[in-house]
Image (cartoon, rainbow over all chains, first blue to last red; front, side, top):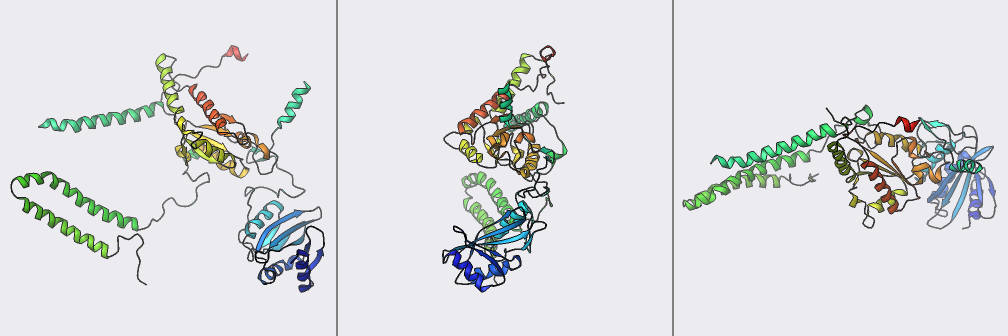
Length: 170
Length: 128
Length: 168
């Protein structure tokens, strides 16, 4: 099945929950209501016609006015894929976790929490995965300011190119 | 006759001198800078958590027990082996053999007991 | 009790120093501290083709049994604190080789938010080996440079006084 057809069928099946199906050429996606993502995910996983048993990727994107969480689903049985998106407000973004459906979401949601600050309700192990536990802020946000030092280690290093330029000027 | 004891005595003295030289040189030449972070228990870079004393499996105790018993048996056989030839020359070889076999037989019965009770198996299958 | 740096410069003391330094340099046991891709090159250097063990350097897994720490790979801020603790737990005398550009200066990932730019922000480094990753021959050269540095150390004899005239 083509991705667009999958999304249209899901849109027909859940009329109020799929907010928009974009027919963009290489990668059509569907924007889903944040409260319904678990229901939709479980339907796509359990239904034998779609059988999306693999969450191949789950990422977050920070736009200026919103934060999006993008789910890339794949089916080994039928070899088809589709893309779902969830749009969240920028301050205190929250969405339910899909960890019970696809176990791969465990670390992927930890990464989104660490780098973008999205809280996943119902996650079994919500803590930072890349940054240290007491790091202030979420690095991939557009308004993130890097602290100048961490536990006495300064995060600034003079670039050797600047020194070379100064030497050449002399 | 007492000259025979001179050889282990020389060995002991050389050993003691060697050890004293090693430890003495270490006390004279080695740097020693202890501070609290250095003396912390090693846990691969993380600050240590939990108790250092843990429960270990009782199988190890069982094996050690069985080992000690049979090791002592072997230790008793060694002196018999050294004087066996004297007994044979005196014509008492059957008596010596019989005595040794009785000793081994008693301990063999113990080995059979441990074997039948399945204490020699690492994972003891207990019937449901 | 210890005689460290207490004796004057007689031939006996300096030759004993040379003997001690030769013994230390010929058996530098390094701690396997491979963090990223440079770890593969570290394993290659210890492998059969370019054998670092012919210089006496054998890998140890524990910090307590090693006197050289070869930091191979990118040091993140999360790891930097643990690296400092591991260095503190090594027994004296200890040396550090910083292998690869990630541990020299942050390397390719210098501008990243999670990377500690250079291991010399947390540890005192003796030899820097540049490269991404450095070839096994380059790391062996770094080890030989470290051996030269070790040969010039003074244990029994007093440290050379800094020349006041040269400083001025």
